[in-house]
Image (cartoon, rainbow, N blue to C red):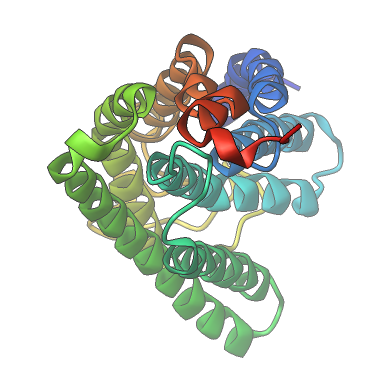
Length: 281
């Protein structure tokens, strides 16, 4: 079966993110799990994009049509914004670390992570309800899906606020984390466009019902061109795929080029500052 435009874009997504899946694995191994919450979520995002693309390609190749593959692929596409936002949150949190690696404002950032997780859960449950056979579930599912994307938008605004706050405190930011803050600042406009697309796409239709991209119900909404299923693929390519890819490239280059671990003090430096803290003979 020949792939349609969405199938081709899904195949391109796989080709785009397989290399970065390997790169993000290297990044996580470089920084570890304990100090690299943001980098771990970058890995999760790349995995979601590869898996989602594979499901959509498989959905168009399988005969007869398997609706579950379409639902799974598009559900991963719709919820993929969450790990990218949470990745940014994790990177911003790392900038608040002290030279000895102590994470400051732990409770506040945990609450923001919870906000992102709630948004993700609402999105997934909403999609699940909307794809069920019950009309009542479909209505509540649409409400939850829209609530989820509003929370994503709120989280993005908070990220911008945190970034601006850190620029006001730039003199107290560690050397290489200043460079990381610059990278995040460059990535935020791309992430803004991606978030806006998610909002427009979610509100472009009152349903998430899909069997295939060619058999989806007609959408006459003013926002129809932003619809994930029936909208213009050129808009999806620019506002969704390319914006995400730009963010991933920026974060990956920053992770590979910046010696962020050099910001931490070595044990020897503590011996120099506090000589009596070492073993006494």
